[in-house]
Length: 119
Image (cartoon, rainbow, N blue to C red; front, side, top):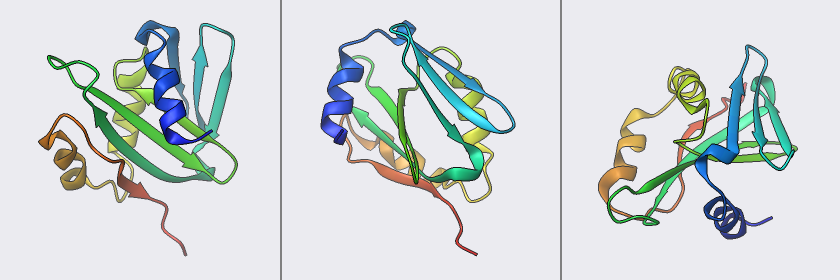
């Protein structure tokens, strides 16, 4: 599913429809419709963040996590997002400067804030 369709789907649901869980091994996103997506920390390849002008008063910030086999998108106000975002911000190589640039307007293209180091 392309990024624009995923964003559309996110807007069609309430923040309370998303529940994130973070463990030492993975991140899980469950929806109220029973859908569940999981990405293992070891498989995580890239994290990007983007902002949309869904609301003039309160822009919506979305996170996109990408692995070789799946993608996971979630709004920053989803249940459990504080714990997930804390873990993301503490990843070695997380780029706080690029993250802060997302807030320069009401709309942004996805900005890669973390990428897995290739050894």
